[in-house]
Image (cartoon, rainbow, N blue to C red; front, side, top):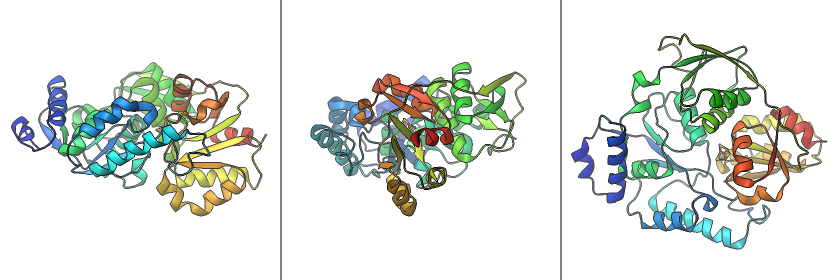
Length: 367
Ligand code: F3S
């Protein structure tokens, strides 16, 4: 743990110190805790533009801890196929170069926990709201909701202000939620109804980890939630009293339009999800555009599955996603199984959205 004076004495870019001091003051932090890793958002040129690029260029120094990056605005190799312009490509690569020089891993994924999973109790400084919720809730690591800028300041200093979800007491659930139906839709509704809370979910069935990942993304997108517990499942659910206030949520979203793109992989697909999609396709070729987003690392590990999926007409894009890439703008209606994509696609890409679970999405892709 560092105190203020020790932070100030670090020989790093002064702006990083100022950012961390400001956060510490606002949240009345108890010092600065050493982190195991940082995860930086705001990597897509579409998100940060020229101003963001200039700011990044001006930051001096290298990262001191393992630092991963959120998706970029394009697949670094298949950008032309996505319809990305030459100018966008060049700018995006400039951003990647800056991060490379800082020593960050060019992971370009919102699921950094698939690359090197944090351990229970690890302190982190992660931006990317879905990964924050997943790491706090499902892994039991500890991070506040960092911005791309504060995560970068922590990557360079190796510490983060010690407050909020870094403290065990503040990880207690605040409301009990009896949940049924689609977990991604449960997260979407829970975020709207319980913004900023720490729900204690009691599901009527066992929820697989990949679906908790979707829940993490949707609850963060609609409600700025940073953590939840699931009875019988998540690592800290037994550590606190169960909240007396009880709410019932049925995970159901009715949102329909004729999809000219089916986009899966928000958050980025795991190897298991890729395998499930292949099983659901069952050797049949898709009749509509099916885009699947995953990290370069997972795609490498699942090479055989990726080849099979592409033979059936699906396109597997790495390094990017349907929300942070402008590539999805050319479609009229995009079908998703993700509450987060449902929330952001109309705002960011100005497209209509249709919602269904993974099985439904694949049925539509085949129709
Ligand atoms: Fe990841 Fe993009 Fe969704 S960054 S969580 S796939 S919006």
